[in-house]
Image (tube, one colour):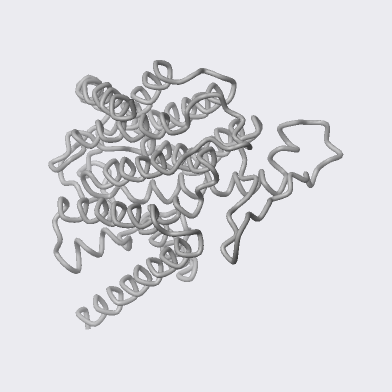
Amino acid sequence: MKLVIFLFSAFVSTILAPLVIRFYTRKKWLDDPGKTPHIKKTHKKPVPRGGGLVVFLGILVGSLLFLNLDQYLLYILLGATILTIVGILDDIFDIHPFIRLITGLIASILVIQTGIEIGYVSNPFGIGVLSLPDISFLNSLDSNIITSVFSLSGLATLLFIMWNMNILNWAKGVDGQLPGFVSVSAIFIGLLSFRFIDDPTTFNTSYLSFIVAGSYFGLLLWNWYPQKMMPGYGAGSLAGYFLSILAILSGAKLATTLMVLALPTADGIFTISRRILAGKSPFWGDRGHFHHKLMDVFGWGKRRIAIFYWLVSLFLGTLSLFLNTTGKIITFLLTVSFVFGFLIWTKWYSQKNKN
């Protein structure tokens, strides 16, 4: 059944992509590096974005067909709708990052207020779990939404979703990069998911994982080099949004998610630290990401970089099937150390060659 769900969702997004491409092209909603140059861009010709709309429609159709539409799924899809609309507006107008941040917070809060939260994490130092108390810091306020968000578990969930939404938006710099490793990551979360006593939903979380994986795989067929469509902000934010929610609903597989997303996560941590230390905005794009260095320093092509990201996620995802929480955290830290070392070395190497 999971294979059928994956293939169906992939089929939906695959057949919808050319329609969106044609519509965006006719409206001239294109990312044209000639008209809006930026150092971070790697494409040379005008390309429509619109990947977020394609992915959203694939997930929406698959969810309505294969999942039980309870209140939790309803709010998840409502949050995804907000992100998709903002993604479309960003495709057209390049809206301010602050607006994207606020709408991302709103989408995340819609999910949290239903009770979907990080209630516990596996104990990395032994057997059992570490509970996050559902104690609100604002108990005096008579509001379910406010008390849900401003609890320890609510804040942890909010940070987890918002972090993943942002770092995955930074990992779509080359053709085929984002949809490939997101599809792989969703598959592994789906394989490791199970229903547990704290899961309030009535739909099959594993099925949703394969719906997400299939929808991104369909986008991959059009985003693969040479790309006919770009993911845009919509597909990047939806990736972090859904992978975070799936990790929580599948039995708090936070360590697993950290593992399969270790490469973009490490790149995100280093990027934010580097920009702050340089006195720059952590959200202002540049050409210092991991995929940029593979391209500029090593001369890797876009296809090689994309496949490298897929293989890293595939390798780490496979390891996650056999490791306990402690092993996953150690693997994650080793990956972060490797990425940090690589980026520091490439910076030194580039400066050396300039001199």
